[in-house]
Amino acid sequence: MREEKLKLDMGAIEAVMQLPPAPVMLLAVGEQEQNVTTIGMFNVFSVDPTIVGIGIKTSRFSYKLLEESDDFSLNVPGKDLVEQVARCGYGSGSKMNKFSEIGLTPQPGKRIKSPSILECPLNIEVKKLEQVDRADWDHVWYMGKVVHTDIDQDYDRGNALVYWDGEFRTPGAVLKRI
Ligand SMILES: Cc1cc2nc3c(=O)[nH]c(=O)nc-3n(C[C@H](O)[C@H](O)[C@H](O)COP(=O)(O)O)c2cc1C
Image 1 (cartoon, rainbow, N blue to C red):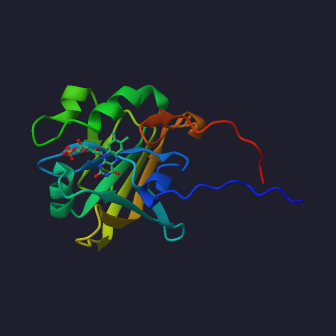
Image 2 (cartoon, helix red, strand yellow; image 1 turned 180 degrees about the vertical axis):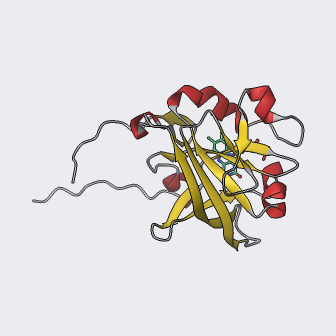
């Protein structure tokens, strides 16, 4: 007799929270007024051309700056930046200068007006292309074309941060290479 595997019926939100962790990044945006914030809602929408997207709530100060800007940068932090990444995900740039208070250095973007972040080993410069803004969704999605990247010579993605459901980690062991 075949044994039935016991499966639980779980709500959609709870089920989504069971997903494995994904890259967490620092979004830097703005020209005159600049801000940095933590972003976990990230996706690659096309590899060639390289189109990436981020989801942001309209309550964020960064949303206002994204609306006013043509571009933004996504900065991939190493594990050494875990404290700074957590802090950028709580304070709001509407009340403080997160760069100076948290100790991150904005550097001029090479092909965008928004800055990138010196301390992050991978900087991805993005020009806005499309926006998905549905009143009944909790995040607005900005999709854009990657127009420039800078990467540290000794970059190791095994030391990049991943995040989900309150837990920061590094990616873990390689099980197989194909
Ligand atoms: C790990 C982590 C990931 C987050 N990801 C997102 C995200 O993808 N989209 C979003 O709108 N807020 C996200 N947040 C929350 C914002 O970073 C947070 O509300 C921040 O204070 C907004 O700052 P701002 O008002 O300066 O833009 C995240 C927070 C943390 C700690």
